[in-house]
Image 1 (cartoon, chains in turn cyan, red):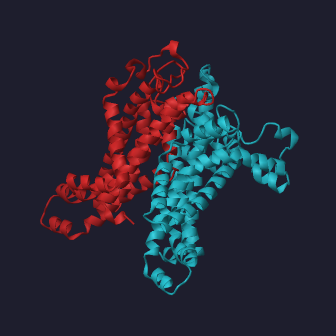
Image 2 (tube, one colour):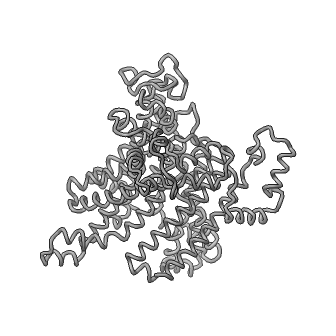
Image 3 (tube, helix red, strand yellow):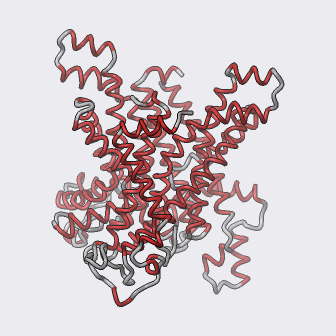
Length: 338
Length: 282
Protein backbone atom coordinates (compact mmCIF):
# COMPACT_ATOMS: atom_id res chain seq x y z
CA UNK A 1 0.00 0.00 0.00
CA UNK A 2 2.78 2.41 0.93
CA UNK A 3 4.58 1.61 -2.30
CA UNK A 4 1.39 2.27 -4.23
CA UNK A 5 0.91 5.67 -2.58
CA UNK A 6 4.55 6.56 -3.19
CA UNK A 7 4.30 5.67 -6.87
CA UNK A 8 1.16 7.75 -7.32
CA UNK A 9 2.71 10.66 -5.47
CA UNK A 10 5.75 10.69 -7.74
CA UNK A 11 3.64 10.60 -10.88
CA UNK A 12 1.46 13.42 -9.51
CA UNK A 13 4.57 15.53 -8.96
CA UNK A 14 5.58 14.91 -12.57
CA UNK A 15 2.18 16.05 -13.84
CA UNK A 16 2.37 19.14 -11.62
CA UNK A 17 5.76 19.89 -13.11
CA UNK A 18 4.13 19.64 -16.53
CA UNK A 19 1.33 21.94 -15.43
CA UNK A 20 3.88 24.64 -14.60
CA UNK A 21 5.02 24.45 -18.24
CA UNK A 22 1.48 25.30 -19.36
CA UNK A 23 1.09 28.16 -16.89
CA UNK A 24 4.51 29.44 -17.90
CA UNK A 25 3.64 29.36 -21.60
CA UNK A 26 0.35 31.11 -20.87
CA UNK A 27 2.09 33.81 -18.87
CA UNK A 28 4.45 34.43 -21.79
CA UNK A 29 1.93 34.56 -24.61
CA UNK A 30 0.22 37.59 -23.12
CA UNK A 31 0.19 40.04 -25.96
CA UNK A 32 0.37 43.12 -23.74
CA UNK A 33 3.45 44.54 -22.05
CA UNK A 34 3.50 43.49 -18.37
CA UNK A 35 4.81 46.92 -17.43
CA UNK A 36 1.78 48.47 -19.07
CA UNK A 37 -0.46 46.18 -17.07
CA UNK A 38 1.30 46.98 -13.81
CA UNK A 39 1.87 50.73 -14.11
CA UNK A 40 -1.06 51.49 -16.38
CA UNK A 41 -0.96 53.24 -19.76
CA UNK A 42 1.18 56.07 -18.40
CA UNK A 43 4.24 53.85 -17.90
CA UNK A 44 7.44 55.44 -19.10
CA UNK A 45 9.90 53.56 -21.30
CA UNK A 46 12.36 53.61 -18.44
CA UNK A 47 9.89 52.07 -16.00
CA UNK A 48 8.95 49.46 -18.57
CA UNK A 49 12.57 48.53 -19.26
CA UNK A 50 13.36 48.29 -15.55
CA UNK A 51 10.37 46.10 -14.86
CA UNK A 52 11.17 43.84 -17.79
CA UNK A 53 14.67 43.42 -16.41
CA UNK A 54 13.34 42.85 -12.91
CA UNK A 55 10.97 40.18 -14.21
CA UNK A 56 13.77 38.65 -16.25
CA UNK A 57 11.96 39.12 -19.54
CA UNK A 58 15.23 40.06 -21.28
CA UNK A 59 16.68 36.58 -20.76
CA UNK A 60 16.26 33.36 -22.74
CA UNK A 61 13.04 31.39 -22.43
CA UNK A 62 14.68 28.41 -20.71
CA UNK A 63 16.31 30.61 -18.07
CA UNK A 64 13.00 32.41 -17.65
CA UNK A 65 11.25 29.10 -17.09
CA UNK A 66 13.68 27.96 -14.41
CA UNK A 67 13.42 31.33 -12.72
CA UNK A 68 9.64 30.97 -12.83
CA UNK A 69 9.88 27.47 -11.35
CA UNK A 70 12.18 28.72 -8.57
CA UNK A 71 9.75 31.55 -7.81
CA UNK A 72 6.84 29.14 -7.60
CA UNK A 73 8.74 26.83 -5.24
CA UNK A 74 9.92 29.63 -2.98
CA UNK A 75 6.41 31.08 -2.72
CA UNK A 76 7.09 34.15 -4.83
CA UNK A 77 3.97 34.04 -7.01
CA UNK A 78 4.10 37.68 -8.05
CA UNK A 79 1.80 40.56 -7.22
CA UNK A 80 -1.84 40.88 -8.20
CA UNK A 81 -2.30 43.78 -10.59
CA UNK A 82 -5.66 44.85 -9.20
CA UNK A 83 -5.02 44.47 -5.46
CA UNK A 84 -1.21 45.00 -5.53
CA UNK A 85 -0.95 42.23 -2.90
CA UNK A 86 1.25 39.10 -3.17
CA UNK A 87 -0.76 36.53 -5.12
CA UNK A 88 0.11 33.61 -2.83
CA UNK A 89 -1.03 35.58 0.21
CA UNK A 90 -4.30 36.52 -1.51
CA UNK A 91 -4.93 32.90 -2.46
CA UNK A 92 -4.10 31.52 0.96
CA UNK A 93 -6.48 33.91 2.73
CA UNK A 94 -9.28 32.99 0.32
CA UNK A 95 -8.82 29.23 -0.02
CA UNK A 96 -10.37 28.29 3.37
CA UNK A 97 -13.77 29.86 2.62
CA UNK A 98 -13.93 28.05 -0.71
CA UNK A 99 -12.79 24.74 0.76
CA UNK A 100 -15.48 24.95 3.42
CA UNK A 101 -18.13 25.37 0.76
CA UNK A 102 -16.72 22.54 -1.39
CA UNK A 103 -16.53 20.31 1.68
CA UNK A 104 -20.16 20.89 2.67
CA UNK A 105 -21.32 20.45 -0.95
CA UNK A 106 -19.47 17.22 -1.57
CA UNK A 107 -20.60 15.67 1.72
CA UNK A 108 -24.19 16.63 1.00
CA UNK A 109 -24.03 15.41 -2.60
CA UNK A 110 -22.43 12.10 -1.62
CA UNK A 111 -24.82 11.27 1.21
CA UNK A 112 -28.01 12.31 -0.56
CA UNK A 113 -26.73 10.87 -3.85
CA UNK A 114 -26.14 7.46 -2.26
CA UNK A 115 -29.57 7.51 -0.62
CA UNK A 116 -31.30 8.51 -3.86
CA UNK A 117 -29.37 5.88 -5.78
CA UNK A 118 -30.33 3.14 -3.32
CA UNK A 119 -33.94 4.27 -3.35
CA UNK A 120 -34.01 4.15 -7.16
CA UNK A 121 -32.29 0.77 -7.35
CA UNK A 122 -34.67 -0.69 -4.78
CA UNK A 123 -37.61 0.39 -6.92
CA UNK A 124 -35.94 -0.36 -10.25
CA UNK A 125 -38.06 0.32 -13.35
CA UNK A 126 -40.88 1.77 -11.26
CA UNK A 127 -42.09 5.31 -10.92
CA UNK A 128 -39.55 6.25 -8.22
CA UNK A 129 -36.70 5.01 -10.38
CA UNK A 130 -37.90 7.02 -13.35
CA UNK A 131 -38.22 10.16 -11.25
CA UNK A 132 -34.72 9.79 -9.84
CA UNK A 133 -33.42 9.31 -13.37
CA UNK A 134 -35.16 12.44 -14.64
CA UNK A 135 -33.92 14.35 -11.60
CA UNK A 136 -30.33 13.25 -12.13
CA UNK A 137 -30.33 14.22 -15.82
CA UNK A 138 -31.99 17.54 -14.99
CA UNK A 139 -29.43 18.19 -12.25
CA UNK A 140 -26.50 17.93 -14.67
CA UNK A 141 -28.32 20.13 -17.21
CA UNK A 142 -28.86 23.09 -14.88
CA UNK A 143 -26.67 26.15 -15.36
CA UNK A 144 -25.17 26.65 -11.87
CA UNK A 145 -25.23 30.43 -12.07
CA UNK A 146 -28.91 30.49 -13.01
CA UNK A 147 -29.86 28.00 -10.32
CA UNK A 148 -28.18 30.27 -7.76
CA UNK A 149 -30.27 33.21 -8.97
CA UNK A 150 -33.46 31.13 -8.85
CA UNK A 151 -32.68 30.09 -5.27
CA UNK A 152 -32.14 33.72 -4.36
CA UNK A 153 -35.37 34.67 -6.06
CA UNK A 154 -37.41 32.01 -4.32
CA UNK A 155 -35.80 31.36 -0.91
CA UNK A 156 -34.62 34.91 -0.29
CA UNK A 157 -36.99 37.13 -2.26
CA UNK A 158 -40.23 35.25 -1.65
CA UNK A 159 -39.75 33.19 1.51
CA UNK A 160 -37.06 35.28 3.27
CA UNK A 161 -35.58 32.07 4.69
CA UNK A 162 -31.91 32.69 3.99
CA UNK A 163 -29.57 35.65 3.52
CA UNK A 164 -28.99 36.52 -0.16
CA UNK A 165 -25.20 36.90 -0.27
CA UNK A 166 -22.01 36.84 1.74
CA UNK A 167 -20.37 34.44 4.16
CA UNK A 168 -21.51 36.02 7.45
CA UNK A 169 -23.75 38.89 8.51
CA UNK A 170 -21.77 42.13 8.51
CA UNK A 171 -22.62 42.82 12.17
CA UNK A 172 -20.96 39.55 13.16
CA UNK A 173 -17.52 41.12 12.74
CA UNK A 174 -18.33 43.50 15.62
CA UNK A 175 -20.64 41.46 17.81
CA UNK A 176 -19.05 38.00 17.67
CA UNK A 177 -15.70 38.30 15.88
CA UNK A 178 -14.13 34.98 14.87
CA UNK A 179 -10.69 34.33 16.36
CA UNK A 180 -8.13 33.34 13.74
CA UNK A 181 -6.79 29.85 14.41
CA UNK A 182 -6.58 27.84 11.18
CA UNK A 183 -8.05 30.42 8.81
CA UNK A 184 -11.12 28.29 8.09
CA UNK A 185 -13.86 30.64 9.33
CA UNK A 186 -16.61 28.24 10.34
CA UNK A 187 -14.16 25.67 11.68
CA UNK A 188 -12.39 28.36 13.71
CA UNK A 189 -15.70 29.57 15.09
CA UNK A 190 -16.53 26.01 16.07
CA UNK A 191 -13.29 25.25 17.93
CA UNK A 192 -13.29 28.62 19.71
CA UNK A 193 -16.83 28.00 20.89
CA UNK A 194 -18.29 30.91 18.90
CA UNK A 195 -21.54 29.11 18.18
CA UNK A 196 -23.33 32.26 17.13
CA UNK A 197 -20.88 32.60 14.26
CA UNK A 198 -21.15 28.90 13.39
CA UNK A 199 -24.91 29.17 13.10
CA UNK A 200 -24.67 32.36 11.09
CA UNK A 201 -22.07 30.88 8.76
CA UNK A 202 -24.03 27.69 8.14
CA UNK A 203 -27.13 29.76 7.46
CA UNK A 204 -25.26 31.65 4.75
CA UNK A 205 -23.83 28.38 3.46
CA UNK A 206 -27.12 26.62 2.68
CA UNK A 207 -28.00 28.20 -0.67
CA UNK A 208 -24.54 28.37 -2.27
CA UNK A 209 -23.66 24.86 -1.14
CA UNK A 210 -26.97 23.49 -2.40
CA UNK A 211 -26.46 25.25 -5.75
CA UNK A 212 -22.96 23.88 -6.05
CA UNK A 213 -23.85 20.33 -5.05
CA UNK A 214 -26.73 19.65 -7.41
CA UNK A 215 -24.54 18.67 -10.37
CA UNK A 216 -22.58 16.18 -8.27
CA UNK A 217 -25.78 14.91 -6.71
CA UNK A 218 -27.08 14.04 -10.17
CA UNK A 219 -23.87 12.24 -11.16
CA UNK A 220 -23.51 10.32 -7.90
CA UNK A 221 -27.13 9.14 -7.57
CA UNK A 222 -27.06 7.84 -11.11
CA UNK A 223 -23.80 6.01 -10.66
CA UNK A 224 -24.97 4.38 -7.40
CA UNK A 225 -28.17 3.21 -9.03
CA UNK A 226 -26.39 1.65 -12.01
CA UNK A 227 -23.73 -0.07 -9.86
CA UNK A 228 -26.19 -1.32 -7.31
CA UNK A 229 -28.44 -2.83 -9.97
CA UNK A 230 -25.47 -4.63 -11.47
CA UNK A 231 -24.36 -5.99 -8.12
CA UNK A 232 -27.90 -7.00 -7.13
CA UNK A 233 -28.18 -9.19 -10.21
CA UNK A 234 -25.17 -11.28 -9.18
CA UNK A 235 -25.32 -14.81 -7.84
CA UNK A 236 -24.07 -14.17 -4.32
CA UNK A 237 -26.96 -11.77 -3.75
CA UNK A 238 -29.42 -14.36 -5.01
CA UNK A 239 -27.89 -16.92 -2.69
CA UNK A 240 -28.09 -14.50 0.24
CA UNK A 241 -31.73 -13.84 -0.54
CA UNK A 242 -32.43 -17.57 -0.91
CA UNK A 243 -30.96 -18.11 2.55
CA UNK A 244 -33.56 -15.67 3.79
CA UNK A 245 -31.13 -12.95 4.89
CA UNK A 246 -33.03 -9.77 5.58
CA UNK A 247 -33.34 -7.53 2.52
CA UNK A 248 -31.98 -4.61 4.55
CA UNK A 249 -28.76 -6.49 5.23
CA UNK A 250 -28.52 -7.74 1.65
CA UNK A 251 -28.86 -4.21 0.32
CA UNK A 252 -26.83 -2.16 2.78
CA UNK A 253 -24.13 -4.62 3.77
CA UNK A 254 -23.65 -7.13 0.97
CA UNK A 255 -24.55 -5.16 -2.13
CA UNK A 256 -23.52 -1.62 -1.22
CA UNK A 257 -20.03 -2.73 -0.19
CA UNK A 258 -19.34 -3.78 -3.77
CA UNK A 259 -21.25 -0.96 -5.43
CA UNK A 260 -19.26 1.78 -3.69
CA UNK A 261 -15.68 1.54 -5.07
CA UNK A 262 -16.48 2.86 -8.59
CA UNK A 263 -18.37 5.69 -6.92
CA UNK A 264 -15.17 7.14 -5.47
CA UNK A 265 -14.20 8.01 -9.05
CA UNK A 266 -17.44 9.89 -9.56
CA UNK A 267 -17.13 11.67 -6.22
CA UNK A 268 -13.60 12.70 -7.23
CA UNK A 269 -14.81 13.84 -10.64
CA UNK A 270 -17.55 15.89 -8.98
CA UNK A 271 -15.08 17.43 -6.55
CA UNK A 272 -12.94 18.44 -9.53
CA UNK A 273 -15.98 19.93 -11.20
CA UNK A 274 -16.75 21.84 -7.99
CA UNK A 275 -13.34 23.52 -8.14
CA UNK A 276 -14.44 25.57 -11.14
CA UNK A 277 -18.11 25.43 -10.16
CA UNK A 278 -17.27 27.64 -7.17
CA UNK A 279 -16.23 30.41 -9.61
CA UNK A 280 -19.83 30.91 -10.66
CA UNK A 281 -21.49 30.15 -7.33
CA UNK A 282 -19.20 32.52 -5.45
CA UNK A 283 -19.80 35.15 -8.09
CA UNK A 284 -23.58 34.89 -7.67
CA UNK A 285 -23.53 34.66 -3.87
CA UNK A 286 -20.70 37.16 -3.37
CA UNK A 287 -18.74 34.57 -1.40
CA UNK A 288 -15.30 35.87 -0.37
CA UNK A 289 -13.33 32.87 -1.67
CA UNK A 290 -11.06 31.85 -4.53
CA UNK A 291 -13.91 31.75 -7.05
CA UNK A 292 -14.89 35.37 -6.56
CA UNK A 293 -11.23 36.36 -6.67
CA UNK A 294 -10.80 34.29 -9.84
CA UNK A 295 -13.73 35.75 -11.79
CA UNK A 296 -12.54 39.26 -10.94
CA UNK A 297 -8.98 38.41 -11.96
CA UNK A 298 -10.13 36.78 -15.21
CA UNK A 299 -12.24 39.79 -16.17
CA UNK A 300 -9.43 42.25 -15.42
CA UNK A 301 -6.73 40.09 -17.09
CA UNK A 302 -4.85 40.25 -13.79
CA UNK A 303 -2.40 37.68 -15.09
CA UNK A 304 -0.16 37.09 -12.03
CA UNK A 305 -3.37 36.28 -10.16
CA UNK A 306 -4.65 34.14 -13.05
CA UNK A 307 -1.40 32.16 -13.18
CA UNK A 308 -1.59 31.60 -9.42
CA UNK A 309 -5.18 30.42 -9.64
CA UNK A 310 -4.34 28.09 -12.53
CA UNK A 311 -1.46 26.51 -10.68
CA UNK A 312 -3.50 26.20 -7.50
CA UNK A 313 -6.32 24.65 -9.54
CA UNK A 314 -3.94 22.08 -11.00
CA UNK A 315 -2.67 21.27 -7.50
CA UNK A 316 -6.21 20.85 -6.20
CA UNK A 317 -7.14 18.67 -9.15
CA UNK A 318 -4.10 16.43 -8.74
CA UNK A 319 -4.70 16.13 -5.00
CA UNK A 320 -8.26 15.01 -5.65
CA UNK A 321 -7.09 12.43 -8.19
CA UNK A 322 -4.47 11.19 -5.77
CA UNK A 323 -7.04 10.79 -2.99
CA UNK A 324 -9.38 8.95 -5.35
CA UNK A 325 -6.58 6.56 -6.35
CA UNK A 326 -5.69 5.84 -2.74
CA UNK A 327 -9.27 5.36 -1.57
CA UNK A 328 -9.92 3.08 -4.51
CA UNK A 329 -6.84 1.01 -3.75
CA UNK A 330 -8.00 0.77 -0.16
CA UNK A 331 -11.46 -0.43 -1.16
CA UNK A 332 -10.48 -2.63 -4.08
CA UNK A 333 -7.42 -4.90 -3.77
CA UNK A 334 -7.30 -5.39 -7.55
CA UNK A 335 -6.29 -1.75 -8.04
CA UNK A 336 -3.40 -2.12 -5.59
CA UNK A 337 -2.04 -5.13 -7.45
CA UNK A 338 -1.70 -3.26 -10.75
CA UNK B 1 -23.95 1.18 -38.24
CA UNK B 2 -27.56 0.85 -37.36
CA UNK B 3 -30.25 2.26 -39.56
CA UNK B 4 -32.44 5.28 -39.09
CA UNK B 5 -35.45 3.03 -38.97
CA UNK B 6 -34.02 1.20 -35.98
CA UNK B 7 -33.35 4.56 -34.33
CA UNK B 8 -36.95 5.59 -34.86
CA UNK B 9 -38.18 2.38 -33.33
CA UNK B 10 -35.80 2.91 -30.40
CA UNK B 11 -37.11 6.45 -29.84
CA UNK B 12 -40.70 5.29 -29.80
CA UNK B 13 -39.86 2.77 -27.10
CA UNK B 14 -37.84 5.14 -24.94
CA UNK B 15 -39.92 8.10 -23.94
CA UNK B 16 -37.12 10.10 -22.33
CA UNK B 17 -34.95 9.85 -25.43
CA UNK B 18 -37.94 10.83 -27.53
CA UNK B 19 -38.45 13.92 -25.36
CA UNK B 20 -34.79 14.80 -25.85
CA UNK B 21 -35.03 14.26 -29.60
CA UNK B 22 -38.12 16.47 -29.85
CA UNK B 23 -36.60 19.20 -27.66
CA UNK B 24 -33.41 19.33 -29.72
CA UNK B 25 -35.36 19.51 -32.97
CA UNK B 26 -37.60 22.20 -31.54
CA UNK B 27 -34.61 24.35 -30.52
CA UNK B 28 -33.01 23.78 -33.94
CA UNK B 29 -36.18 24.97 -35.68
CA UNK B 30 -36.40 27.99 -33.38
CA UNK B 31 -32.79 28.91 -34.16
CA UNK B 32 -33.23 28.54 -37.93
CA UNK B 33 -36.55 30.37 -38.15
CA UNK B 34 -35.84 32.99 -35.45
CA UNK B 35 -36.58 36.03 -37.68
CA UNK B 36 -40.01 34.63 -38.56
CA UNK B 37 -41.00 33.41 -35.10
CA UNK B 38 -39.75 36.29 -32.93
CA UNK B 39 -42.50 38.84 -32.20
CA UNK B 40 -39.94 41.60 -32.58
CA UNK B 41 -36.95 40.52 -34.68
CA UNK B 42 -35.26 43.92 -34.33
CA UNK B 43 -35.26 43.71 -30.54
CA UNK B 44 -34.23 40.06 -30.82
CA UNK B 45 -31.07 41.26 -32.57
CA UNK B 46 -30.40 43.63 -29.67
CA UNK B 47 -31.90 46.98 -30.71
CA UNK B 48 -33.20 48.76 -27.61
CA UNK B 49 -36.73 50.07 -27.16
CA UNK B 50 -36.58 52.52 -24.27
CA UNK B 51 -40.33 53.12 -24.14
CA UNK B 52 -40.89 49.54 -22.99
CA UNK B 53 -38.37 49.21 -20.14
CA UNK B 54 -39.33 46.94 -17.24
CA UNK B 55 -42.62 45.52 -18.52
CA UNK B 56 -43.61 42.31 -16.76
CA UNK B 57 -44.77 39.23 -18.62
CA UNK B 58 -48.15 39.90 -20.21
CA UNK B 59 -50.15 39.62 -23.39
CA UNK B 60 -47.86 41.86 -25.47
CA UNK B 61 -44.60 40.63 -24.01
CA UNK B 62 -45.01 36.99 -22.99
CA UNK B 63 -41.69 37.00 -21.15
CA UNK B 64 -41.65 40.72 -20.30
CA UNK B 65 -39.02 43.23 -21.39
CA UNK B 66 -35.45 43.74 -20.19
CA UNK B 67 -33.38 46.69 -18.93
CA UNK B 68 -33.29 48.24 -22.40
CA UNK B 69 -36.95 47.59 -23.13
CA UNK B 70 -36.30 44.66 -25.47
CA UNK B 71 -38.85 41.87 -25.69
CA UNK B 72 -37.31 38.99 -23.72
CA UNK B 73 -39.11 36.33 -25.78
CA UNK B 74 -37.61 37.68 -29.01
CA UNK B 75 -34.15 37.72 -27.46
CA UNK B 76 -34.55 34.20 -26.07
CA UNK B 77 -35.54 33.01 -29.56
CA UNK B 78 -32.53 34.72 -31.14
CA UNK B 79 -30.32 33.40 -28.34
CA UNK B 80 -30.78 29.86 -29.64
CA UNK B 81 -28.50 30.78 -32.56
CA UNK B 82 -25.20 31.48 -30.74
CA UNK B 83 -25.89 28.62 -28.30
CA UNK B 84 -26.29 25.99 -31.01
CA UNK B 85 -23.58 27.48 -33.18
CA UNK B 86 -20.97 27.39 -30.43
CA UNK B 87 -21.96 23.86 -29.37
CA UNK B 88 -21.74 22.46 -32.88
CA UNK B 89 -18.54 24.31 -33.79
CA UNK B 90 -16.70 23.44 -30.59
CA UNK B 91 -17.63 19.76 -30.67
CA UNK B 92 -16.88 19.48 -34.39
CA UNK B 93 -13.47 21.15 -34.22
CA UNK B 94 -12.43 19.51 -30.94
CA UNK B 95 -13.52 16.09 -32.23
CA UNK B 96 -11.68 16.58 -35.52
CA UNK B 97 -8.42 17.71 -33.92
CA UNK B 98 -8.69 15.05 -31.23
CA UNK B 99 -9.50 12.30 -33.73
CA UNK B 100 -6.59 13.11 -36.03
CA UNK B 101 -4.09 13.26 -33.17
CA UNK B 102 -5.63 10.22 -31.49
CA UNK B 103 -5.44 8.16 -34.69
CA UNK B 104 -1.82 9.13 -35.25
CA UNK B 105 -0.88 8.37 -31.63
CA UNK B 106 -2.81 5.12 -31.45
CA UNK B 107 -1.77 3.65 -34.76
CA UNK B 108 1.81 4.88 -34.96
CA UNK B 109 2.69 4.18 -31.34
CA UNK B 110 6.29 4.72 -30.25
CA UNK B 111 7.63 8.18 -29.50
CA UNK B 112 4.90 9.98 -31.50
CA UNK B 113 2.32 8.35 -29.23
CA UNK B 114 4.33 9.31 -26.15
CA UNK B 115 4.61 12.96 -27.20
CA UNK B 116 0.94 13.37 -28.14
CA UNK B 117 -0.34 11.64 -25.03
CA UNK B 118 1.95 13.57 -22.66
CA UNK B 119 0.70 16.82 -24.21
CA UNK B 120 -2.84 15.56 -23.60
CA UNK B 121 -1.96 14.82 -19.99
CA UNK B 122 -0.71 18.37 -19.59
CA UNK B 123 -4.02 19.78 -20.79
CA UNK B 124 -5.96 17.34 -18.64
CA UNK B 125 -4.06 18.20 -15.46
CA UNK B 126 -6.35 21.18 -14.88
CA UNK B 127 -9.86 21.02 -13.48
CA UNK B 128 -12.55 21.11 -16.20
CA UNK B 129 -13.21 24.54 -17.71
CA UNK B 130 -10.29 26.22 -15.89
CA UNK B 131 -8.05 26.23 -18.95
CA UNK B 132 -10.89 27.57 -21.11
CA UNK B 133 -11.53 30.38 -18.62
CA UNK B 134 -7.87 31.35 -18.58
CA UNK B 135 -7.55 31.14 -22.36
CA UNK B 136 -10.57 33.33 -23.04
CA UNK B 137 -9.40 35.84 -20.45
CA UNK B 138 -6.03 36.14 -22.18
CA UNK B 139 -7.49 36.13 -25.71
CA UNK B 140 -10.06 38.74 -24.75
CA UNK B 141 -13.81 38.22 -24.37
CA UNK B 142 -16.09 37.38 -27.30
CA UNK B 143 -18.04 34.53 -28.81
CA UNK B 144 -15.29 33.39 -31.21
CA UNK B 145 -12.63 33.49 -28.52
CA UNK B 146 -14.91 31.60 -26.14
CA UNK B 147 -15.36 28.91 -28.80
CA UNK B 148 -11.62 28.73 -29.38
CA UNK B 149 -10.95 28.51 -25.64
CA UNK B 150 -13.45 25.68 -25.30
CA UNK B 151 -11.79 23.79 -28.17
CA UNK B 152 -8.43 24.18 -26.43
CA UNK B 153 -9.73 22.52 -23.29
CA UNK B 154 -11.87 19.90 -25.05
CA UNK B 155 -9.75 18.25 -27.77
CA UNK B 156 -7.60 16.14 -25.40
CA UNK B 157 -10.67 14.13 -24.33
CA UNK B 158 -11.29 13.10 -27.92
CA UNK B 159 -7.62 12.40 -28.56
CA UNK B 160 -7.49 10.12 -25.53
CA UNK B 161 -10.71 8.33 -26.50
CA UNK B 162 -9.71 7.74 -30.13
CA UNK B 163 -6.16 6.76 -29.24
CA UNK B 164 -7.41 4.06 -26.87
CA UNK B 165 -9.76 2.63 -29.46
CA UNK B 166 -7.18 2.82 -32.25
CA UNK B 167 -4.60 1.06 -30.14
CA UNK B 168 -6.86 -1.89 -29.40
CA UNK B 169 -8.02 -2.09 -33.03
CA UNK B 170 -4.45 -2.11 -34.29
CA UNK B 171 -3.79 -5.61 -32.99
CA UNK B 172 -7.05 -7.05 -34.30
CA UNK B 173 -6.76 -9.66 -37.05
CA UNK B 174 -8.49 -7.71 -39.84
CA UNK B 175 -6.08 -4.80 -39.42
CA UNK B 176 -3.04 -7.07 -39.31
CA UNK B 177 -4.20 -8.91 -42.42
CA UNK B 178 -4.73 -5.66 -44.29
CA UNK B 179 -1.29 -4.52 -43.24
CA UNK B 180 0.29 -7.82 -44.35
CA UNK B 181 -1.46 -7.54 -47.72
CA UNK B 182 0.34 -4.25 -48.27
CA UNK B 183 -2.58 -1.89 -47.88
CA UNK B 184 -1.21 1.60 -47.30
CA UNK B 185 -1.16 2.97 -43.77
CA UNK B 186 -3.44 5.84 -44.71
CA UNK B 187 -6.06 3.49 -46.10
CA UNK B 188 -5.88 1.18 -43.10
CA UNK B 189 -6.32 4.10 -40.70
CA UNK B 190 -9.14 5.58 -42.74
CA UNK B 191 -11.04 2.44 -43.60
CA UNK B 192 -10.36 0.02 -40.77
CA UNK B 193 -9.52 2.17 -37.77
CA UNK B 194 -11.48 5.38 -38.24
CA UNK B 195 -14.70 3.67 -39.25
CA UNK B 196 -14.59 1.59 -36.10
CA UNK B 197 -14.12 4.55 -33.81
CA UNK B 198 -17.09 6.50 -35.16
CA UNK B 199 -19.53 4.90 -32.70
CA UNK B 200 -17.71 5.93 -29.52
CA UNK B 201 -17.02 9.29 -31.17
CA UNK B 202 -20.70 9.94 -31.85
CA UNK B 203 -21.62 8.88 -28.32
CA UNK B 204 -19.04 11.26 -26.86
CA UNK B 205 -19.98 14.14 -29.17
CA UNK B 206 -23.68 13.78 -28.43
CA UNK B 207 -22.95 13.85 -24.71
CA UNK B 208 -20.70 16.91 -25.08
CA UNK B 209 -23.09 19.16 -27.00
CA UNK B 210 -25.11 20.01 -23.89
CA UNK B 211 -22.02 20.41 -21.74
CA UNK B 212 -20.52 22.89 -24.23
CA UNK B 213 -23.71 24.98 -24.16
CA UNK B 214 -23.50 25.07 -20.36
CA UNK B 215 -19.82 26.01 -20.48
CA UNK B 216 -20.38 28.75 -23.07
CA UNK B 217 -23.27 30.09 -20.98
CA UNK B 218 -21.03 30.16 -17.91
CA UNK B 219 -18.34 32.09 -19.80
CA UNK B 220 -20.91 34.59 -21.04
CA UNK B 221 -22.38 34.94 -17.56
CA UNK B 222 -19.15 36.16 -16.00
CA UNK B 223 -18.59 38.47 -18.97
CA UNK B 224 -16.04 36.50 -20.98
CA UNK B 225 -18.27 35.09 -23.72
CA UNK B 226 -20.68 36.81 -26.08
CA UNK B 227 -20.74 40.58 -25.67
CA UNK B 228 -23.70 43.01 -25.61
CA UNK B 229 -25.85 43.83 -27.48
CA UNK B 230 -25.80 40.23 -28.78
CA UNK B 231 -28.72 38.10 -27.66
CA UNK B 232 -26.96 35.31 -25.82
CA UNK B 233 -28.63 33.34 -23.03
CA UNK B 234 -25.73 33.43 -20.56
CA UNK B 235 -25.29 37.14 -21.13
CA UNK B 236 -29.00 37.76 -20.66
CA UNK B 237 -28.99 35.95 -17.31
CA UNK B 238 -26.07 38.19 -16.29
CA UNK B 239 -28.11 41.25 -17.37
CA UNK B 240 -30.94 40.20 -15.10
CA UNK B 241 -28.94 39.17 -12.04
CA UNK B 242 -28.93 42.67 -10.53
CA UNK B 243 -32.69 42.94 -10.70
CA UNK B 244 -33.61 39.39 -9.85
CA UNK B 245 -35.79 40.57 -6.92
CA UNK B 246 -37.61 43.30 -8.90
CA UNK B 247 -37.83 41.98 -12.46
CA UNK B 248 -37.42 38.24 -12.09
CA UNK B 249 -38.32 37.50 -15.70
CA UNK B 250 -35.18 39.13 -17.18
CA UNK B 251 -32.85 36.42 -15.83
CA UNK B 252 -35.32 33.56 -15.44
CA UNK B 253 -36.39 32.93 -19.04
CA UNK B 254 -32.96 32.94 -20.74
CA UNK B 255 -31.69 30.59 -18.02
CA UNK B 256 -34.70 28.37 -18.56
CA UNK B 257 -33.83 28.29 -22.26
CA UNK B 258 -30.30 27.06 -21.44
CA UNK B 259 -31.69 24.44 -19.08
CA UNK B 260 -34.25 23.10 -21.57
CA UNK B 261 -31.75 22.99 -24.42
CA UNK B 262 -29.07 21.25 -22.37
CA UNK B 263 -31.65 18.86 -20.95
CA UNK B 264 -32.76 18.01 -24.49
CA UNK B 265 -29.20 17.33 -25.62
CA UNK B 266 -28.44 15.27 -22.51
CA UNK B 267 -31.58 13.14 -22.87
CA UNK B 268 -30.83 12.59 -26.54
CA UNK B 269 -27.16 11.91 -25.82
CA UNK B 270 -28.13 9.31 -23.25
CA UNK B 271 -30.47 7.72 -25.74
CA UNK B 272 -27.81 7.66 -28.44
CA UNK B 273 -25.42 5.90 -26.07
CA UNK B 274 -27.94 3.24 -25.11
CA UNK B 275 -28.93 2.80 -28.74
CA UNK B 276 -25.45 2.58 -30.25
CA UNK B 277 -23.80 0.75 -27.38
CA UNK B 278 -26.28 -1.56 -25.65
CA UNK B 279 -23.54 -2.82 -23.31
CA UNK B 280 -23.67 0.52 -21.48
CA UNK B 281 -27.26 -0.15 -20.44
CA UNK B 282 -26.57 -1.49 -17.02
